[in-house]
Image 1 (cartoon, helix red, strand yellow):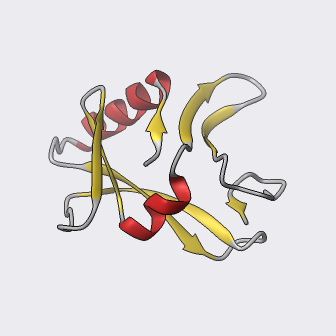
Image 2 (cartoon, one colour):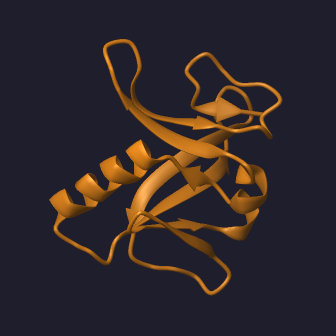
Amino acid sequence: MITLTDSAATKVKELIEAEGDDALALRVAVRPGGCSGFSYEMFFDREVGADDVTEDFGGVKVVVDPSSAQLLTGATLDYRDGLQQAGFSIDNPNAQRTCGCGQSFS
């Protein structure tokens, strides 16, 4: 299962509050595609499947499907708001290779 840093959890919580729907969870998934073989996908979701893996980080519910959970074990989702590095990033120890944009891996 992926872990959220405090800054990522805070930012996701802000985004959910802006949506005005406390029932939303952050779904993190790995899909085939991207320039390195797999790409990350993140979106808000209300539906949680019986086999989904869920975890709470600072009041933010994170949901991952079982296939993606295997590829995200030990990964960390971070958020930075700086001049050079702004936005969400995933540090995944399972990635043997990543592309230049950081959005796909193999």
